[in-house]
Image 1 (tube, rainbow, N blue to C red):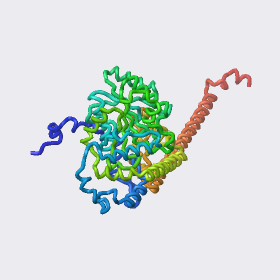
Image 2 (cartoon, rainbow, N blue to C red):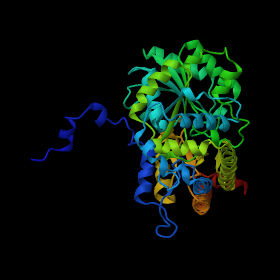
Image 3 (cartoon, helix red, strand yellow):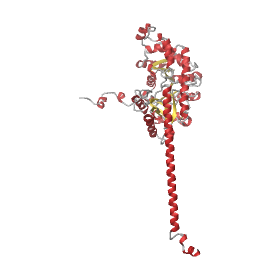
Image 4 (tube, rainbow, N blue to C red):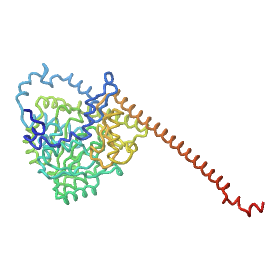
Length: 487
């Protein structure tokens, strides 16, 4: 006798069978639409173009060139095969020393070498996903919460909440000030949590921001640090897009704030999450990093990393690559240049048809403003229009509601995961839609004008008829005996 799925779930854990992973969000629905009908220039030119994946594919030629010139970095080549046995047998959750040293070096150079990182504080994890969950496990108990400025990455609802039981409390940011985080918004969110008897354990920020593509200035970072120090809560800084800032001199890491203002807060409260998924374009390598200024957190996180280690083969390759400063500096420079060009191309082309976006110069995406296309300013209207984008325009962009944005009509558009030809196809699809929409608006207005003119003509005709009737009526002044006598 077969047992139904629902009955089977009764014998499984609540964590495993709940909806905490978030796969039912539109953010992931767009991916599913792409998976079932992916665009291909030859075999499926009318398919869905993937613009919901923040992936950096613009500099793989530099990576491939380095790999070709350094076959000894891989244990799967004759030149590197001599290290196969040692690499295959050795697996320490502290990580290879040369790997941690290379990561610390890379993190420093990405931030313009304005700050140094201690390799002994580097804890590896299976991508930023695993790093965030580990940090949540270290800092908070089930039911306790982190404040998170909106809009924020939808994956946080999975990474920090699903298995930990931790809550996320939105800090509402608005377009009126370009979604900047204010002290007033922080205090309001903190007070609401207290009123609900929720203990706030920390503040989580993404710097640069996903999905906004912006980053915090020094004064704002100082405000955030002072805030968490006053409340005696933790500050978790996700800096996985640090290397995507087109002008590295503008980006300020939280590490620089602590270095420049050493007494601004208790350093034990500050933790950085990093990875190679975005800056290097290595999401498949699952290289996540926790960098904490708290010795206890470092030790605990290192123990917990046993559940999500980076393979020593990957560590070996990454260490070889990121230890070469000439390659690292050239890669960072070239990546920023190509990202800036792609970002400017997209936003410039869309601006030509009246589509605006939040001013930004970081990340692998931009925050597109489509509020004027909504029939009404509601999230229901946003979802209706999003389905048009997916099913008719055939683009997978992510709706703002997935990012907990409090204003309908904003969409995140990823631009670095495709080649130049696909970019132009996507742009032409958007332009065609805008053109067709405008033609429809003009036609609708013309029809409305014609209808109004006909109504006015009919009204004038009726009024004229009524005046004629009045003239010919027995009660009309023209038919009065006195008037007739005068004539």
